[in-house]
Image 1 (cartoon, rainbow, N blue to C red):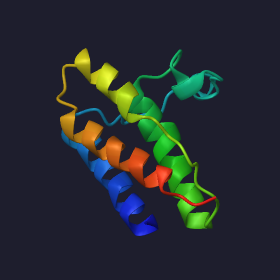
Image 2: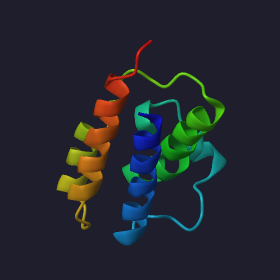
Image 3: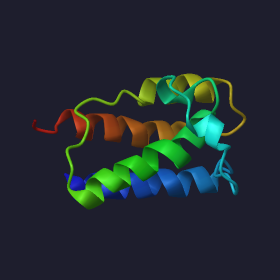
Image 4: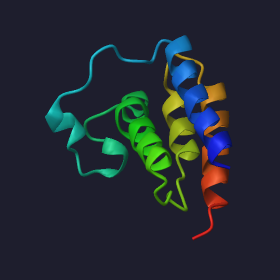
Length: 107
């Protein structure tokens, strides 16, 4: 499961780059310090994926630490891409995979 999750995370990164949503510069420290879920008040979904979610998931996987048992990112991505210029169908599908893989984690 961890190998599949790692590959899915890499695919999310590659797709963000492919559709032009990968940022070259990070957001401010203040934006990254948001206490709102998904930093909804300071970051776009692609920024949150790039600068919060992907690095944290990689850190957990690399350190062999417990993974979250629930995620629920796919519905947020569906809403984001309804109004985005980029086609996010593949990212949504990848996030559905992440949600499913994490729901399989045994506590």
